[in-house]
Image 1 (cartoon, one colour):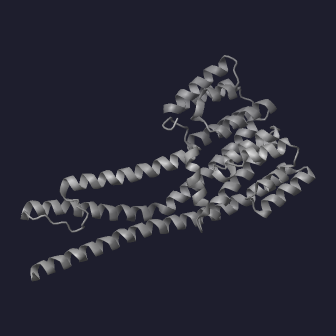
Image 2 (cartoon, rainbow, N blue to C red):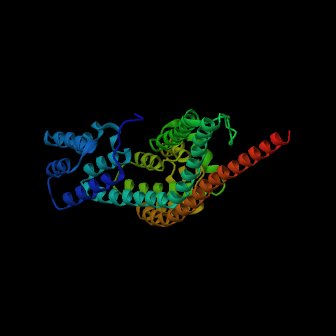
Image 3 (cartoon, helix red, strand yellow):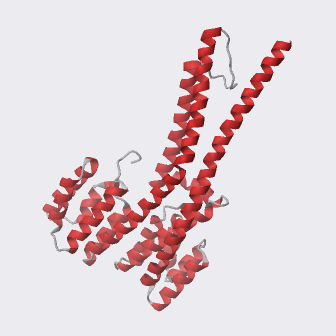
Length: 344
């Protein structure tokens, strides 16, 4: 499951938009997915070809998507199912296209903000690697073992160990990020820890609430059963704090409590979110209230992303500074050591 392929955001956006537009224009769904299968490539082409064959045999799109296992997001599959049941599949797909497009823009903006700091970190690490290799060259020329950095890594063998350590660190980061995106349970303590960090917890919470408000607006507008709608909405946050609240909130709803009361009891939600939920529920316009709140939180999420980008940039710069300072002290210590040896 961890290494199984998953659809990328950009092709998923195109799939949602083209499919939604074609269905809105009255094109038969079997024709739509047959064309999409011809258009796609790689893993997506194979999945769409299987879906197209299932549709030709009279199966539903939701069942065909479920047969593709984890390749498509859970929220996408469940909303497609609701869209089919309510006859509003085209509208659901177009709304999901807008949602995933926003997520893609957020990701691109974040990557653009940390590109230069990451490049600086790469240069600093490359300098360290060059010094390790160059000390091996000096040893071959002079016959003396010179360890300027004091790490015990010299020459080609030392460089191999250094590169292996860097690869292991990069792999560990990739594993944690990928596991968090796939909702694996063991990453939840890490997510909770991040929410407690000053300056970082608040932006992360805002981005999670923006996804929650959007998902609640979309799921409840399709006529999905309330408990299923809330469960999917909380899962869409991809945040351990809110995912862990699913059993408690569903139990409150089952006991006959209001949606507002369930979220209030669970705790951890800001007053503006709870107030909007309360007013929307009492007025019978919870879908409209969530739509308005979703737009507001999307704007807040942009500011939150900017804050996270700044924090990430400073963190990377701090790592660069740590590498440079370490090099300076190591070189200075080596220089003093050589002077002391000469005086002795």
